[in-house]
Image (cartoon, rainbow, N blue to C red; front, side):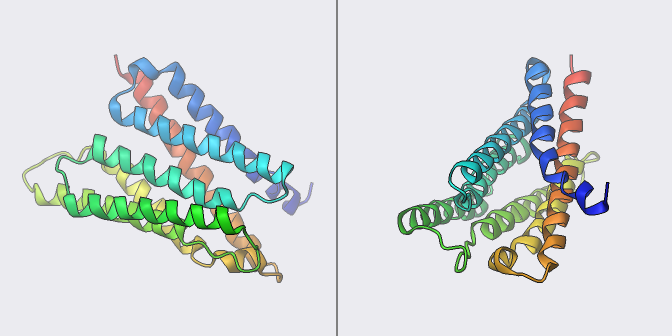
Length: 218
């Protein structure tokens, strides 16, 4: 089997990883703490998005609208994790930014739903907005922890760094969405390859975190 044939199977691993994560979360649900239940919600929404995307691609031949809907699900889930499970303060300015980001993505979703989608001119900014706000949430968490200089243990620090790393790279990848859809020289292949590898690593990290929390907690 050639290298590119092997690479072609990577996108098929995404729903498998998500299904494993959701299944583990359901099995261990009663033993999970609030944070890891939030991670389970995130993986579940990503699984639903993945299935819907594949269904629309198969039935309609076009699933580009899912790009925006995916961003909305992602932002809502990650924001819930930070505001309900990780932040110790309200961070009102950040909350306002998050709400405005959600409103913008919903507006973009409605506009593209009403007017239709042309792949040649398709350049949504929902994923950029989604990634940027999540990066701000991660940096806000770091600022909150650093400002409490007497705290000897930074709870959820590893998870926060993983989120910061993943969404920073994701934002770089998805800035040129229109280029990725319409570029014909083959360069876009490496962008999509980098994205799916990054995605699988992030999902794998979250699955391990859920498994560890469910296995250890009494």
